[in-house]
Image (tube, rainbow, N blue to C red; front, side, top):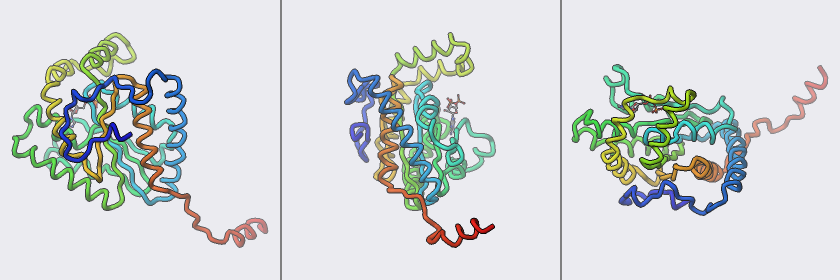
Length: 271
Ligand code: ADP
């Protein structure tokens, strides 16, 4: 999965990343889907241990262009986890109260506690993306945020959080196709917002903002992955593989809190 990983401080040009890339999976769609199903089951088992062990905290961040597939990835990859231990946090346009605080205030309240997995659908990265592109705050304000974010994420990891960040990379052709689908399919129509057409025109500016974000905030403690996302099945497989691989390394175990169950068994059997 290293080919999707952005090395700290690496200069990123998104044009070097093909959103149609199949990686090592050339022409093996059926095989990929089978592998993906197995990964979802593994993720379910790992999350069960995460919850039971009550030790690690997992934060998974998704960023993408409009129609980039954040919702679809979350729905597909996490379908086998227990909703009890998993939360999704969506970050929309900040409310007036949120705007009265620093931009990390609303984010910190949503980070995972012990045993939890939290998925960010958009995140604090909006504060160096949409905020930068639309000049919602001056340059000297947003430009300091890369440092804040790295330090914030470092605090989280030093306090036991594992962070993975995914940029779902689609191209403008694919976005057009997906917008047209939203306009034509009554079940998808609600997702279309006329403002999306204006945002689409700003892709050049977003591209610059994403490239700087990827370069400056992919750290040893909170890495970014650029996932080719024009094809859902390959996108899902890559995201699930990276998450399962990372969770496997945590070497989690079901706790064994009762050293000697015999007295309890005897008590139950005699009642
Ligand atoms: P989504 O596109 O994620 O499905 P919405 O259509 O409700 O959900 O879009 C959420 C909007 O909120 C996006 O346009 C996003 O850029 C915006 N947003 C998120 N965080 C911020 C922020 N900190 N400042 C300004 N806008 C933000």
